[in-house]
Length: 454
Image (cartoon, rainbow, N blue to C red):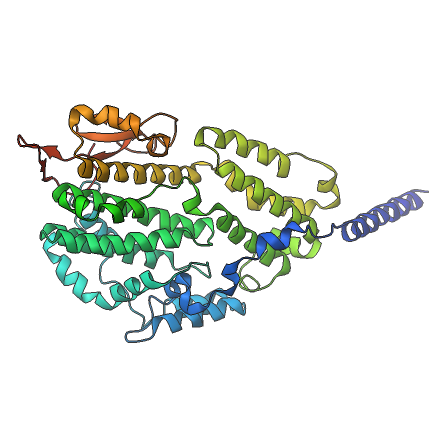
């Protein structure tokens, strides 16, 4: 009798497994018509020679090589699903170009306040020598300024970050030599490039590097305008256009979510560039047992709601992201029984985005800093007096107000700063300095160095 019971239980369990497997396979959804419109964009037709991301892959090409062609060769490795070891050995070949200074050494030059003198810091007088030693790398980097598009391919973020910092050190070097117009032109070209980069289609990983570099770039124009306010008048129209705040659209939420979706889609299909990488067990299982169409449909709907949440004023974003999470991950329903692997896979790929809204907060901070920089240019060009400052800040409208509230920017006459509260800033505020006015009503050039001024 006992054997029959055990056998019956085993047969019953086997039947349940077969029923579950049949339901898992047969009850998958049809693809949502929204999917094709979401994943296809003009970026699909961008040639390698026009793609910033391809150039970034080739930055460390051997001396004298065509770095764009070299980057295209690395992209081809990604496209055919080469292993991580193959890609990394090509990306960082032993004979490839490398910076002659460390990331921290460059930081000493671009942020002397944030990086007080340390043993790894080099004298500022050595900037010229370092720039010359790394001229080919810098020339490659500046050649990227001419490329019109950014569509993520692979990742060479540390090289991108460090060469960007060296380009900023070069601007600071020109300011120190009082070559203000030269410094401005170098700043303008890099800043325009960064805005093109951030408008592109890239993942959070790539966007984060661009945000860091843009954040380091804004104090440079502050330093130029404070040491030589006439630059603000000479290039007023250009500066206002370059610095224009655009809310969240300049960050391209749609391009961000499209890039993140393609990661999920490639994992489900086990296609390049992820096919031969070191996958998590859950990613592999989802490609075998997950309901692929249901996951795709859910991710597209989630991506649209997530993008809409990001476009809200910041004070509404955390609560809206919580509601999006409740709809697409945190509520247990019948689909979790039919497709437990796919549901877990989806949750893993959206949970960190939903639970870390502070990642996106930096976009609002930088948009606020663009507003501050624009206000500085206008104050210089329009000759706004100190006694007029508060009234001026109230008159410019909410598009130049605080990024985290509906109110105008604040004025601190003692520190001569326009600012907005920023809890992530070590100073407590994000601010920009306003040059003093002498007894004849002219702006006095700024005497301080670049860097944080708490």
